[in-house]
Amino acid sequence: MQRDISALRKSYSKMSLSKNEVPDEPIKLFDKWFSEIKSSTSLEVNAMTLSTIDNEGYPKGRVVLLKHYSDEGFIFFTNYNSEKSISIKNNNKVSISFFWEDQERQVIIKGFAKKTSEEISSNYFNSRPKGSKLGALVSENQSAVIKSKQVLIDKFNELKDEYKNKEISRPLNWGGYIVSPVEYEFWQGGENRLHDRIRFKLIKNNWLKERLSP
Image (cartoon, rainbow, N blue to C red; front, side):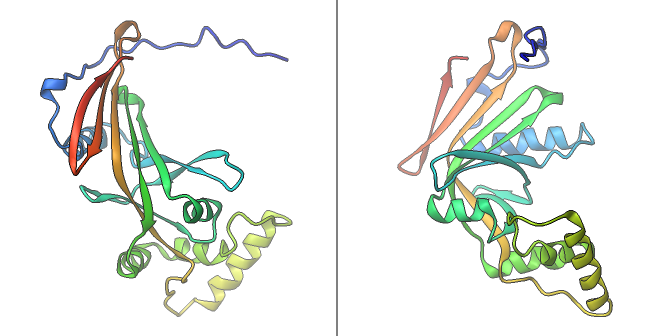
C-alpha cells in the first residue's frame, strides 16, 4: 500500500549564508557552525552519516560519531572487521554528512579515509567507559550473522567477570579512521526553497569557494 506523505513539509527561514561572509578556509566555517549547534541543543550533535561503497557497488550510509576534527580531517572509531571498514579498505573514497535541524543546516564532506595512528586509537579507547570497552570485545565479529541477542548478552557477562579486576587493552581489530576532505558543501535552509549552498573544492592545495544553485 502506498503511503501519501506529500503534505509533510517545513519552511526554512531562520538564517541565510552569504558567500562574501564565509571564510576562505572551510574548516573555519565548520568549526563555527559546530560550536553554535553544540551550545544550542542537547541532541547528539556529533552524529554524522558515513557513506561508503560496498563490494557490489552499492552505497551504504550509517550514523557514526565524530570524535575529533581539525584542518587535517574528521576522526571516528569503529571495528576494523566491520562492513564499513571492509568497504573503506576496497574503496577509501567516502562521504560524511551532518544535518542539524535546529539551525536548518547541513554539511556534506567528501574525502579519503585512512586508519589513524595506533597512538590515537589507543588513547581514545583508553578514555572510554568500561562497558563500551567490553562492547568492543563482544562485537569482535561486527556485522556477522548471530543466532540471537542473547549471544551478545552472554558474551558481555562472561567478559565482565573476566575483566572485573583487570584493565582492558584495545583489541587490534578496533581503532580510528580519519577522513581527509577534498570537498565541503555547506547548506543553509532558505525561504521558498531558495536554500544557500556554498561549496569548497580542493584544487592544488587551495580551496575554491563557489555558490551553488539550490
